[in-house]
Figure (spheres, helix red, strand yellow):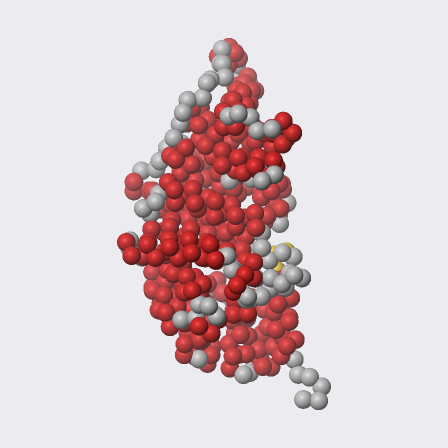
Length: 410
């Protein structure tokens, strides 16, 4: 492992622990987060050339505490508190529970007063240790936009009076649902980027899996945490086979399954098998179970679509949503035929969230293709290509349309 890679790994792992220690000691999430970010920047510039310190965590805590003192002095000077600040000495850090702090940080970053976009940005910054520039690159938005989201998020947390502690039991389940949703959003954006020239943003999928692992370590008995981690592993296992050398998208049915990550699949199947046997069923577990059925099929034609449809029926019953509806319709078509799927699609597309969505046109094109209506399929493949902002998806959909185009002399 290269020095830079090891430094990056250390900073990712230590960022939430150090931030947790500062917030627990000093209070004030916003100023503590700024101090930790400056310590991370200092480490990223010094450690690759100077080598890792003997105690990386202690080094970061010391630098962050010093920077916190400087920031607090600057802030309190305006309030004529120089005398009180002058006697402040940088404290020796006391051991703190990394387990509680990381979980508490995740819950704080997913505070209900924040928008989902702000929750994602703050989670990646405070818990993931990503810089503002890295987050901006991952989501293809200006760095200033991410900076504003993070700044507003910290201001809202401060204005809400939220404290650095575990929320009350009555609120905890709702906040945990938000945490899982944020990690799910981060993973999905990394696995199929919503725009741009790349299909994957590996830095996001890797970060989502890393944070899900941390969460599972801290909450090993939470079935939905295990389900989400299993879903990520079973899905990300396909990544080596999802694109050709030129970046062209390869659909699931056409992928070379020998390229799938067998180790990730085994881990994911182990997780979801144990969880389903011992806990109440939740939506992430069901999605992981669906992914497991796909991954267990040696060939696309071996896929147990009846089992998948049954799982989608359960998922639709407990966590209905537009994408669940679309994916279930594909399973319906595979079990009962494309015409049945098309009839259900005509009903589902009335949902406001699906109006004009490229996935609706893509699914309709696929089902029309299955039904042998090549001209209509070609039209809808091109419609889907026009509607998506993802370049790899555009190329794939255009290629499907071109394949169905009538040829001279036929």
